[in-house]
Image (cartoon, rainbow over all chains, first blue to last red; front, side, top):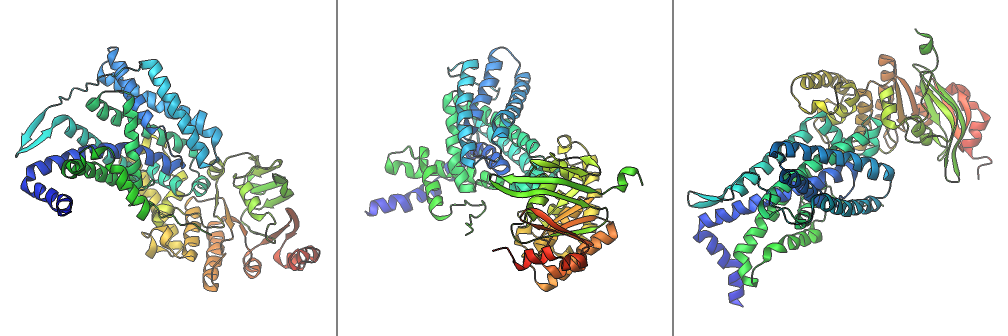
Length: 312
Length: 261
């Protein structure tokens, strides 16, 4: 009994204090992964805020973006050109989704729209594989996957570049939504559809914008994860990790997605390294869901989400 | 004045709205003259809000036409109606609750800010100059409505009476030609009602804004409106100066309940 208590409450902290450099390494790794979770979660939050749609297809959009990019590069298209084409494809996709899926379903219940995005999920998955093939592809963005040591801390160049890119993108999006006219319109739509319509904000344009931005975010996430673990179907499962992030951060909060991603990223890395051995490891795969479960019990609106008040 | 500007600002011609089997409006015709304050009254469920929703494009009539400045615009969407210069408030305050009062009003100003919606994503340069010019106008509205002290407060945190005032401010920020107010004084205390009445009269007097409002408080209606239209069971049963409508037999009937049980 004492041994277990020691293993849970004392041992891990002694290990952390014993080797601070290693702790920093673990934390950095957690932040890097966490930022990428944030990025995927941001795609969800944007769409959910502006249209109330829980976009089940967000994960497949990541896969689809990465597939398109790799597919083009494999056919000898230079990286930059391939990137521009992929961006155009994702914006075109947003346009099509608004036209073909959202517009005919306007004013339908949230569950109907959710079902529509499940359909979209399967369509994109099949279509992507039909066009680009189903085999695992290597994505080489020109950043070597090697490590160097700063002040005794081992740092992975690829991971850090990915984290930096994610951080910059997250910052740009935050500024975009706080400062610009479109950002204001977007927040208005998120707050109250009717009022937004009545002051002349066209919902269709807003939807096009959020789905495009979600598509662009998907490209970045696709590149990050693709460069790390290859472009393959499992990439779309990254989106599943965004679910606990959303539960933590709240479905409607941009800062929540960022903080939630970091908590999940850092939490699962710390858990894996320090508490993992107690239960035989592999905590990383389910730890995030346990955190989410705890949140669902005690704070269902998440850290930053709007509190759910049922009016009677 | 051009010939077009001489006619009524808004003409509702024989409009009917149906929700399934329920006929919410049947053959309602109503004009709103330039510069007047028109009150639309009637018992609960008479179709007042439906009429407002039809005018602002949220519902489309299955019968009848709506003309704004002489042009047919029966089937426009709400954003397009807003673009024509119609602003409105809602019965259950529809503010952007997470935003500050200032941001709410700036959002109301959105249509007055030119430039391309997609291209001015960058805040600097022309977009920034525009922001400042429009901010100046919004500050005037804030002064006018005497809400300087709450400009940074999130709208959702304000007491109900002030929320109603901010919602009026958001509508005014768009410099509308026609202002539609759905029960602007509902749930207010006497003092707040007096303030709101004064603002409505001032908006009309100082900016010449045409106003159509729905209101239940008969005292207020008789005091501030130039003309009163009465709806009952989706039909217009009276229309005229307040002192006439007050004595109208059909109106008394509708309100006092004879033949209504």
